[in-house]
Length: 389
Image (tube, rainbow, N blue to C red; front, side, top):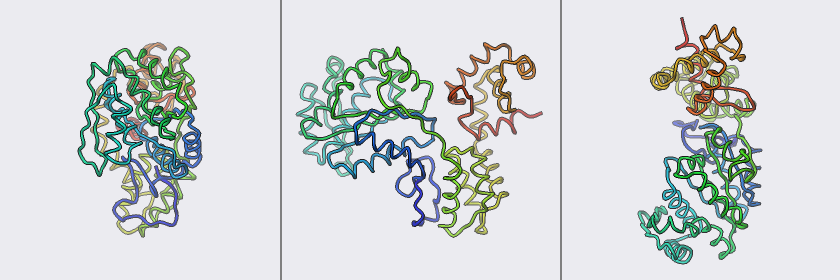
């Protein structure tokens, strides 16, 4: 997400950034969370970071990594993304690549580290673009399956040999539950990683219910593995001045009410606040953005996403839709006789099952017993475009 720097100006074509990692002047607020994460990185404290999709976890980890690296010349941070990773083999490959890259400054060092610290596995090294660091390691899966210890201890062994300290950051960590024998795999990871003294792990993911089960269930191997914290929404008092300054830096202005309208319609959702602000900025042809401009921009955004919402809604059962209808109408006592009758909810058990299914579909989120929509634009579309008549 975005970091507030009032001194800088931004290119006229992109005053707001969304859909990719925000860096430098594009990273806003998160000062407390950034400081927390930097402290954990420098102290080698294992960290578990949880929040819904598109709330800025990757941007936060990236920012904290930059700051931590600047303050400690012996620190190395590597990043692994488990998006679309569905098996152990791919996991080991990405982990080994990330560690080797983070601890090697040139191709010769890559070869040397690979030969020295992965001697039993003898991986294949493929160089795509040496300047860009495009290096791929390949393993014989039968050999790796018999003895993955060298990969799991790779960071610790390199750190010990070179006098380094390493942080391994793994995004979408909850995807390991889709591996074959996931419980056994988690036990293997924990048994190795808990013995590491010169390496720590930052494990983060966007499926709260899965991450919570991995790290807060006493029956699971990663129970109490590290410092667990949740990433919240950016508060209005931080977003409002940022939006105002972005407009001003590009020679445009925005009414204070219009600025608050952007934040309100997007429900402080970091991705949508910036997307709606960008559309509003583009529509401010006369150099000024009013509440009317924001509302027109919001209508355009809803229309732009409507086909996606229609397709998503068609996958839901009648009982799931009944629960969503009740939610969009402001109901909270979903199992009361009156609410169940009004929205044709069949039973309290149906409410429980629908909640569970909608959380698994990333439509709803449950935090401290409170049920909410993950996507505020979808919630608005349901209320004003779908549940009508």
